[in-house]
Image 1 (cartoon, rainbow, N blue to C red):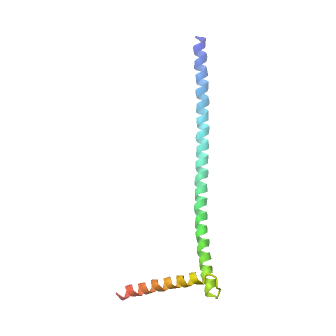
Image 2 (image 1 turned 30 degrees about the vertical axis):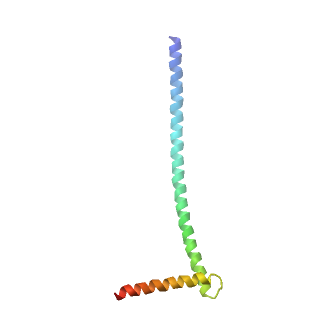
Image 3 (image 1 turned 30 degrees about the horizontal axis):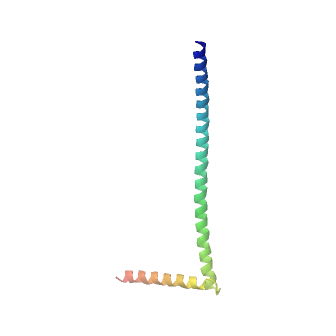
Length: 96
């Protein structure tokens, strides 16, 4: 009988250790999930900031070209032509 009791005690100890380890892993998982959400929000914020800087850069390139800079002149002309076409399209729709 002593062997059976020893086996049962051993199993109880092992089960207790497994349950404890499971609880620790649950806590670790919850912590990592929170960190992941934080990092995802940070990435979204940085992407929005990057988009904003890209828009500002493009506007600055166009402004420099309009002020007489030879760089990006072609892009500026294309942008102006696109804007003119958009305005013409709007006028045509208003005329109808």
